[in-house]
Image (cartoon, rainbow, N blue to C red; front, side, top):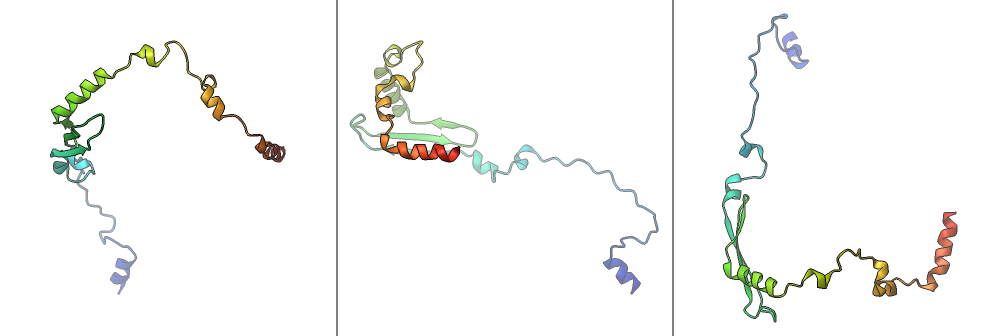
Length: 137
């Protein structure tokens, strides 16, 4: 009966102070693939091809198709035709920087008359603004 009670209340050894020497534990390291919690690393590293097709538009009457090979390590574009068309379009429609922006001038919203027109205050809100100011005081 006494042995049963000792087991319940946590008496582990009957060696009366004699301790067994523990083996020195080695550090436990995982290799980099096992340390990551991304799931199946081998599956993630397999390249998969994705094909995206785009409808015909006025700008692009042929339509478009983009084929990419994607893996966890890299992304490759396999559609040569689409990339050539993009480079041709960008070179033909590019605007020189002097036309689109003025160098040395910082753009401010105060300078644009359209924004000033949109930001004109409405006098019907003055009563409510005054009430809000009075509440703050």
